[in-house]
Length: 233
Image (tube, rainbow, N blue to C red):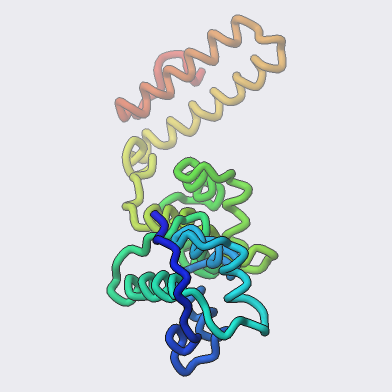
């Protein structure tokens, strides 16, 4: 909810102290994870009820006004107090982002959790609604994209912290004989599937494919060491 707008104005030093305004504002931008100064100005406008134009005019360029609305000071110092106290800052995610190098630091844990980069992008996409191709850009070591949305980073961080799910080798295929049998059945199943699709969906090949698929599932679930009758003749 936006604050009530007042006409009260203050000199810059009440906001920035002895620092240069531009340096202080950049420090605030990075501390609050705004992806740009314009995004910070938009968030201030939304929080204070001031117009974006007036906020942008006060905080941008080399010819700033001598005095600025006190509502800006109240807004920014309130947000910075939250950061200092370790409290959640009430700023919409749409205005905030993290440098992509912070995404890259999560990559080893994410690979351990998901196995492949493609699986990482898909998992993050499913939780955020961001397309996997877009998520991938946030993990480039060098590229034109320098920031990742805070919402994407937050999901990636949560995913990296989750325990790795058991792999098929850890669970269903722990037994070596079962694993080798399953691999042989899977290869034959794929071979029959290719033949079925390339032969006009021959009904006899469809029956064979479905029989092999059932045999593969049964072998894995029941940890069999010997193939079902007739499957690997």
